[in-house]
Length: 235
Image (cartoon, rainbow, N blue to C red; front, side):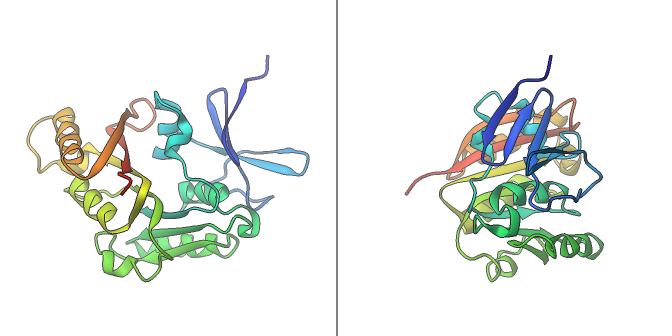
């Protein structure tokens, strides 16, 4: 029996144990992922073992659409690496030739990874790679066209939660969605085991001006990772 298809929003759906996004650049994969066609539409498989956002879509106990951006949104991705997850966010937010009018600013500190992002952006209008330290709002502000509707932080640094709160304070729009992918191994300066480090981050978020919507354990897909889904309070 074919797996049931569940639409999660424009250009994204779940089919059985797989997530798929509507490919903005038909005929091209980004990381060798599977593609399939349905008439004039091509879908790309979004691997939840290689993407914290896709893993969260599989693991969330709430409505998955709460953690993905809307078409036409302004998005800020901190720690973009070579652009695997970024490309799927672009599929949703911008679409082919950016017909949605979205913007995805992908910040990465590694020059090698940024070269891959630049190559990706040449075929994906609306994607803006930025070689910068994601902890520096002054370097990010000139690229963003305004407040971000959606922010994802995936940085292997100490003080991940504190950095996330500062970034959201600077850039997240009223009512906007902020996702923090927290890796326990990057918080070794904190005492205790992995769960105590996650608890510390959770406490920091709860004491901030953000609303903590859900703590999503990614175990089995992304080990030693938790994704915190937050929302900026409406002013």
